[in-house]
Each structure stands twice: as structure tokens, then as C-alpha cells.
Image (tube, rainbow, N blue to C red):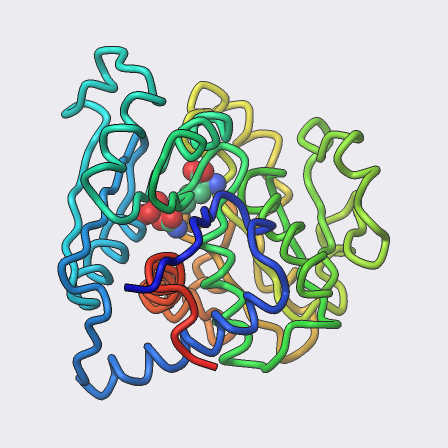
Length: 309
Ligand code: CP
Ligand code: NVA
């Protein structure tokens, strides 16, 4: 049996440009086979453990369905059903689970938790969302852009809203895949200067006005104003973000063929108007579906290594 070097997918920057080129091709191939109802089961007898410390619909279903479709099985572990809720150290959980399964997906709070898990794991660990990153979502989002419009290199993505985990992953992706992110966040919610200072002007530009960020963009995207774990700030955020809703007027600032994306779940009438998310420029359902195909390619890559030239 070929030994596959141990790799983790903890943030978008875990992989380089060549690996993404390979993955996009695998996503396309795996999706095509799936659409033709052709069995493809390279992960027979393999097991994925999914650890959820936060709620999920898309990540849960796409990983579990994807693992089954690849011939393997998925075990779902919620914080409250496991000894994690009674204080078992994450390092011990990693040592034990990783002796029993072939790959682990975790959705948790601080990035340091997943890093500690990975440092003690014998098998690949995938970030299914932390407070700081959401790389699986951006993998699917960029694949969705490529499917609809071709290569993302040289394009402009407008990020309207919170400087959250999604934005961090977009900014990493921009540097690896060579595109630009226009960012507009309300005052008080900006990227920390120690982070923005390190971002090259070729890949990042900040705008006070959301309309200015959207101007000329190829893709306009946003996310909830209050991410999981920050619910105590919800009322203040609803006030502070009120002018940052992506609506038809804001979309008109972007290129006429600009796409709209949202990782979901969405709040119509808050970060996006119903007219935009349910309108002709929105590709949010393709984007959600592509979580399935993208993560199947990711699971294949981490467990089997490169399987195609
Ligand atoms: N976009 C996303 O990660 O959705 P879930 O929270 O439902 O998994
Ligand atoms: N930024 C959101 C994404 C949800 C998929 C959150 O972390 O809650």
C-alpha cells in the first residue's frame, strides 16, 4: 500500500497554487461522475470522524454524504455527546480518535484548538470552520466562480460586512490564487491593522463605503453580521451593520455580469436583500452544492494522495 504523507487542511494557506489547480480539476471530475450516477468509491473501508462544537447544516450533510458516496462512512460527534463536554483535553481526544479513523473534520472555536488537535493526530485533520478560518467554504466558492466565469486570477471580489473567518480565508486565497479583495466593514469592525498591514495592495484594498468596495467587482459576497460564538453582540451589530446590506443598488455598482455569493445561512433583510439572494446574479445554491464535490476531492487528496496526473 502506498504511504500518503500526512497533511492537514487547517486554513486556506495549508495548500499551494499547484495543489489548488489539481484540486479544482478533481472537483470537476468527481462532480461530473456524480451527475452521471457513476459509482466512485476510493474510500471504501475508510472512516471520517466529524467533531462539531458549533451548529451546522451544510458542512455536516456535505461531509457525511460525500464520505458515503466515496465508499466510506462518517461518524458524527457533537461536543455534548462526547467527553469533550466534560473537559477531556483536546490532545487526548486527537490521540484516541486518530488511532480509530482515517481522517477527521472539526468545527470549533479558536484556531489554536484545531492546531493542537492536528499536532497530536496520526491522520489528516480538516478545518470545518473555526472563529478565524473557513477554508472548505472558500474552496467551494472559488470552484463555483471558476465554473461560472473561468479563472479567478486577476478578478476582484468585493467583501461587504464583517471581518470574520470567511474574510480571512478569502484574503489567504487572494494571495495564493492571485486575485484582489475589496473589503468594506463598518467602523469598529475593521481588520486589525497588524493584519491588514501585511496584505499586499495587489490583493487587498479597504473602503469606508460598501458601494465603493462593490464598484467594478466580478463577485460580490457577504456573510452573517454575527458569527457563531459572538451572539452576545447581535443587537449592537444589527445597528452598526445596517448600511452594509448587499441590495440591488449595491449590485449595480459591480460589473454587469458580477455574481453574488453567500456561504449561508443567510438573513434576508439584514446582510443581503431578498431581491439579490433570490435574484439572477445569485449562485448561492450552486455554491452550497459545491461544498459536497469540493470536500469529496479534498477527502480523496488527503487520504489517497494524488490519484491523477
Ligand atoms: N456555510 C456553512 O458552513 O454552513 P453550515 O454552518 O450550515 O455548515
Ligand atoms: N461566519 C459564519 C459562517 C457560518 C457558516 C460563522 O462563523 O458563524
